[in-house]
Length: 351
Picture (tube, rainbow, N blue to C red):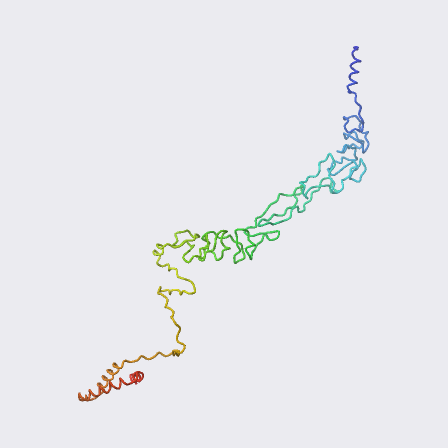
């Protein structure tokens, strides 16, 4: 042996290479304890070190393997003594080295339930149904793996929200989503664009008006000679315009615009001017005209005289002398002249 050996041994001793180990130290290297010599509840690294033949995941000799994530053999949270495997109480999380139960930080997270050796996960509803504006947020339930599914929505259009869900009918336009209106059948329908047939302004898209001719128009178009249907105006339907004189001449069937005020009378269908109104009321002292009987026409005095003279000549059996005939004719004419028109007409009536 060389004389340098004692010096080498001294240096090795001073370097700390000679270490001692405690049999209960969990950081000790394996095979430091004799097989089967470690009692229940003492520290171990291998199953063979324990008299029970089972070294729990916590590093303690246990009465059985105790490998469930919700099982423990150290006596903490199980109600058992150290070295006896037990189930963790309800609501507890697994002990190291087991990982905690899965969770997304919602109410769906798992935990021990005091019975099973593994984590238990709820299946209850984790998100309530809500509705805002015209969008419904659907309810959701836990997936059984510690997570609440992502939120999903359902559009209510053409209806609006009613409480926590979508409406299915309407009475007023407020029950409809923007861009829709409530029709007579109680349904929400889309508002009309330019040129659509309307009866009220709420039926037209925002920014349009319902013109007097029943068309959704770009403006009110209430002028007496304005139209929004696009006929004879040179503009598209839905754009207010006035008919040009050329268009009116080319369309004789189009009636001219007439005053519609209460002081104006409309022309009849034939195109003639209306009759003029009387300039003054009838006299209050004049008796009213008799109804149901037409007045008789007055006969001309000279005509009645000639008629009577001719018939008198025809009915006479013998022609009188000229002098006598002339006298008779003169007498007849004088009587007809002095007689009243009513008497003359009465004599003229046939028997």
